[in-house]
Image (cartoon, rainbow, N blue to C red; front, side, top):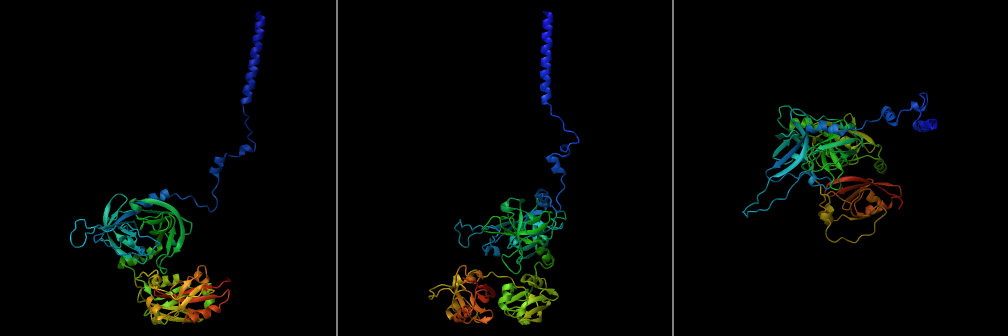
Length: 513
């Protein structure tokens, strides 16, 4: 009995031990040999960490670091006027960009007192940034325009009164100064000439009184024209810019100021504009020395030479600034410059476009002598010009035809191959359009949509004076010249623009219809 019990016990123990061994052996995973190919491959995370950067790759931008460095140099500017009135800025006139200055309607006379109703002070808010430790601050002209008291609030909570050092309405730049005993954080200035479309930028300012707001976007366009085709060179960005951002810095990924936020689109929330910092650098010495900017002026309206102009006018040069109009009594008129002259150089500098010519002339002081190189009817001519001071810019009537085209109109025939209907410029139209006595031609009564004339920017109310340098003295002259044009021809229309009181060239390409 005992022997049998012992034998059964030994068998059971052996069986259990065997089963446990099988279970343990099955749960083990064999370790690969150290010489196997798999063991030479690191994990995905390790491979990613040790992978060298691509050649030429740009590291990710950390705008948190940029904002941390620049924020202390950004200030809030409170502009107050006792009179309740401020000068109208160009941003209150034109519909695309808006003015950051927030204006409230005059309150009613609650006390019923005789005389003028009492006016409350006007307060506007904007931004700025410190450019040196002595307390000079850059902002926009329209932020401080008309203000009788300027208060600057710093990131550390201090508030100081500021005075205007100088201001330039034409570029919308102003320089103000506070007395802070030389202990101020300074925003480093970059080079806006190095900017590229698509580059990351950030804006810092005080939109809608939300102080030191940071927004990020990219450069959308460089060289945008908004108010003045001659001087404007705006940086367009989709970094959010709102009321109160005006005057604040636009900053690149290196933490350098490359623009001064200036305007926004009234029709979109992500289209903002900044004045290039290089434009501000160029006028800072004059703002500090004179309080204003003096620019040279010759008194011409220009168009850059392009292939269509070259073909239609049979020009012998493919680059330069073509003179469209010469202002009466201007330095250009006194020097003998004429319409259709192509300006190709000033002194030793070549001129390839209207922007280059304007930059060269504006950089010279009034009273200076300049040698203007032109091409006239294929011949080179050098003319000495004594520069005058550039006059202040005035707003043109955006639609003089709406004002003057009242009353009944005679019946018109259908549009021609160019897409125009014209009529003789009689005494009645001359009076209603307020035309100078020396303007003759055919007035445009209708422009057919999507026609060659429409594509060439011909507008109703303009007076056609010449086509391809052939005089147009009547509607019949226009119809004769237009009828002789064939498909593929390019016609140069020389027109007078009522309201703007200027002459301009438009090229119209006649395509098969």
